Amino acid sequence: MSNIKTIGVLTSGGDAPGMNAAIRSVVRTGIFYGYNVMGIRKGYEGLLYGDIDKMTPRSVGDIIHRGGTFLQTARSSEFNTEPGVEKAVAIAKVFGIDALIVIGGDGSYRGALDLSKKGLPVIGIPGTIDNDIASTEYTIGFDTAMNTVQDAIDKIRDTAYSHERCSVLEVMGRKAGYIALNVAISGGAEAVILPEKEFNIDRDIIKPIIDGRNRGKKHYLVVIAEGIGGAIEVAKYIEEKTDIKTRATILEHIQRGGSPTVYDRVMASRMGAFAVKLLKSGSANRVVSVQNGSLTDIDINDALKMKKTINEDLFELSKILTL
Ligand code: ATP
Image 1 (cartoon, rainbow, N blue to C red):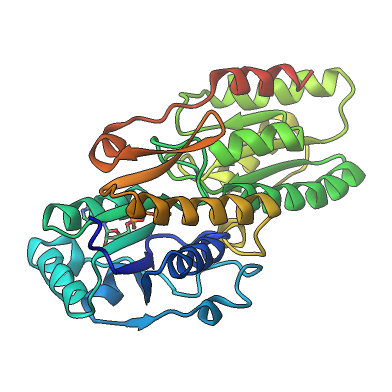
Image 2: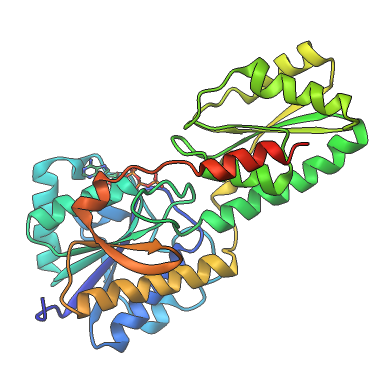
């Protein structure tokens, strides 16, 4: 591993605020330690088509405050095939890339694992707003996405209070309810519906709203994770059952954009540097992970076998605080 001279970096899967800070950190830390760093555009797709440029410290200037990823990202179906992976390794060789740092989610880690099996050393950095990667407590973009949702909730609450309405908010998270659960607590929701938890609409949504009304509440918030969906239908059902005017808001991609929070910028900067240092120390085929608040690394194969569970204490707290 000590013969690594050139590191490639790419972002893959869904974009997340803070990815730019991670790329910037990989580029600048890499150059600081004497490596060449190559930026690969559009994820594995760009690797397959040689959409690759040498990075300098200035290539990553003026990006730390921007959401999205300046290298852009893509979902590549060609890469998901064995010939695709072989071609990607061959192209990396043509560009002199000795090791690759992949910033993305579980799908991107799977692609990285495939590359490692064909002889290209890889390091994964967790980047996805959903925080749904089992091998880490934190993923780049999660804090910014939650703050974007919180900002929307505060605005919706103002109007919901004025009109004594109920608001149903659908937030991102296909298989994971981390955004939903956290913003339910920070936004003071009466009910939260998560993909990880079975639910009953009368017991888990209608009853808390009616109980809340009986305790003198004047407005109501229901948070639903994207994986459950159906915010518009749920809103109609609430109105039918309770006679409370109800509006649905589906936030969709607004949650993916925006300037990253301080926390995301710092975490992304730390993770980028950590990934470079792993390569420097001779490690390969590892993913960067946050455990008990500290950065560590895990074998990529083991990381992909882990299962993430919802924080039960947080879920219970979300119910108690509706009192
Ligand atoms: P997010 O969770 O934000 O959507 P992700 O990294 O999980 O991010 P995916 O779309 O699942 O996003 O994966 C990104 C890319 O990684 C895919 O387009 C594909 O090129 C590659 N990839 C995904 N799954 C696999 C797999 N099973 N094997 C090899 N490569 C994969």
